[in-house]
Amino acid sequence: MNVPDDEQIRALHQRFAPSREAFELVWTHCRVVCSVVEQLLRGRPEDVALVRAGALLHDIGVYLLSPGEIYIRHGILGHDLLRSAGLAAPLWRFCSCHTGVGITRDDISRQGLPLPPADYVPESGEETLVMYADKFHSKTKPPVFVSAPTYRSSVARFGPDKVKRFDELTAEFGVPDLSALAARYGHAIT
Image 1 (cartoon, rainbow, N blue to C red):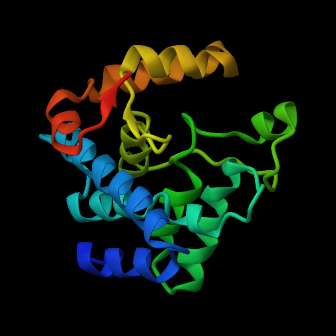
Image 2: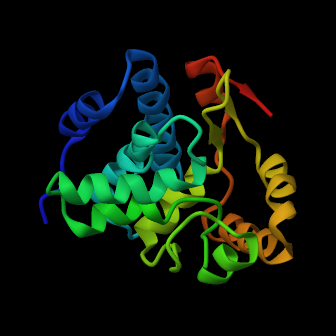
């Protein structure tokens, strides 16, 4: 599989970003997630090049959201964008399988989510690592780092099974040190 490098991925972001502001917000977030992934990856067996590419690509679908379109759709939009751009199938999945701690067909039905019925859950260690690392940074205005306790409290609104899954991810990967990243990017930690 041909895994694009950072510059090729940056060029994809620039190609699809509707504005410089959107590019800066999403590209910065993806770089932050990549930094979190690299911190959590130390000593793990995942494919470094693949997981880096996944971290840098996971939110590219944000650029395709129409005004008023529900944000949760950005994952499947990114999946379709990468497929149309000719990238390898494993890269598409980073987009569609990173939301929350995984979205199941049952979640879609129970919550009435505007997604095609399917399971959007990570299957590989690389996908799981990107999904987990993404929980620690938010593109809110202004962007912030999200502590593990804050995310755990936030995900509780979706049910105890989601809290349990986050706790399992925390046990498996550990909790990243966000302080150096917060200083580097100038984003607060919540």
